[in-house]
Image 1 (tube, one colour):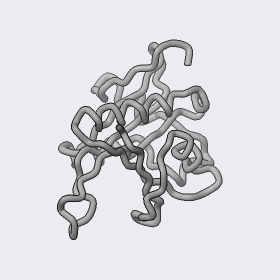
Image 2 (cartoon, rainbow, N blue to C red):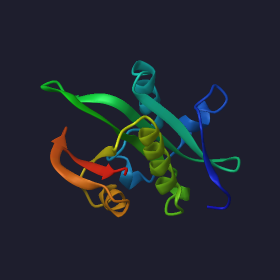
Image 3 (tube, one colour):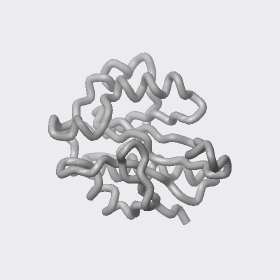
Image 4 (cartoon, one colour):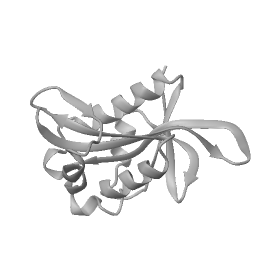
Length: 155
């Protein structure tokens, strides 16, 4: 990171750049494009928390949190928040931007009163599993849509 990264809301002035954000081709099967994430945020405004990651004037990534969703219909008290999507531009990976984005979502989740953050990942060689494990997320033993569910204590 060359300067202090920051999060910005998606606006009419930056949405096109956000939609052009490109990850590595070998990662495309693990995460949806930003445009798909923004469409989901539009139809789920009460739970989606989309933000762009900038370093100076440079757009380097996209992160979207999910906030206070009921995880399963059979347990209405199981309400969770965490990382919904994370896309770091191919040219900017390995520089700490993903770690920054995850920490920012975790800070927002904590600010809203939760004591754990959740994430799901698809197992695979180019996938994000090792990244999330290095950040302290641990598999819960659950799966969601074939993906591993991980949790990180926020205390």
